[in-house]
Image 1 (cartoon, rainbow, N blue to C red):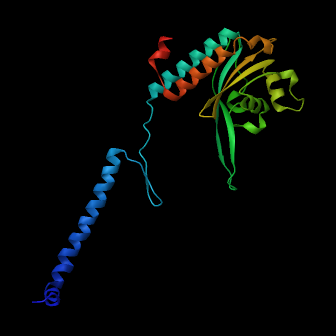
Image 2 (image 1 turned 30 degrees about the vertical axis):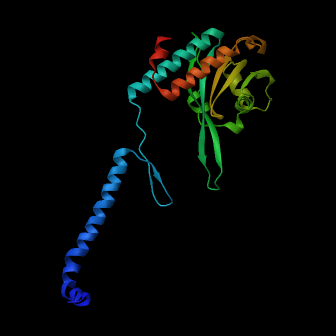
Image 3 (image 1 turned 90 degrees about the vertical axis):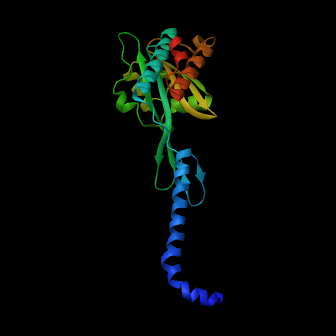
Length: 229
């Protein structure tokens, strides 16, 4: 029997048995490969497929402890400089428009005030999701890494001048925190009494140390070493 006669004699066996077995084996191979990728948390990125392991979610208690540590550092920083308000301003992407352009925004995420004072009026509205480009004092800090300003020196037409006057703010010192040259946070000290830039000449390293510490806490979460300090 030659090969042609063998094929004719066994054609139905190949159709109903061999082909389903081949497809079944192929399916099992693909399924096992996908399972292996998910199990081993591999990252595969090609033109057609991208499988990425999910980032672990931080437990709620860790969020609470982390924020308490940040507030503790802010309180110490505010107290050291006798500021009326100390705050963390987080810089973030504000989304993209239909034309592909993206906008950068900032939001006040943590703050504390001296006894008998409040931080800012309507802070949930006025100090949230604000455009960086329309906040000249934030722009100056990002450009210069640190920025001291007096509210009286701001433009009369500035909406932020009116907002600071409404909150009785007279002066402020801002410190930028970057990670890999990427602007991340602005730590702010605000004063409701007279203050000059000379008051910070010999103390800028203290603001820098607290700023870096706050940034580290926010990135890494609760850490026993911060609690011990």
